[in-house]
Length: 139
Image (cartoon, rainbow, N blue to C red; front, side):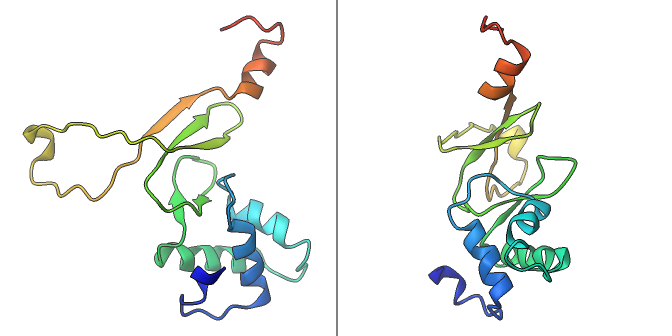
């Protein structure tokens, strides 16, 4: 929670609850997921409060907005360089902490200044694989 004290934003009980929810969270939640969890303790909190807080945290580099789910924005409080595994069935997202350094030749670079990269891997998570293949044979 220390990292949020210097954000220059008023730390209301609702915002603190949102930040506590995010601390160490690896589920890559949507604003709706965050709201659903946090509003149990703050029933008068609005979804707009969650969206506004997430946007402020994104602008200040404390969360990454993921665009991997066309249905909704998802957020990742893990802001260090990493990649993701995404289940095409249940949309679960898992962090991949392996360094992939693709070699880009001059043609692809064409005056680009590379500031970051993100690789997404798609497939079926273990639970969805079992669901699709209950007998246990490998697919």
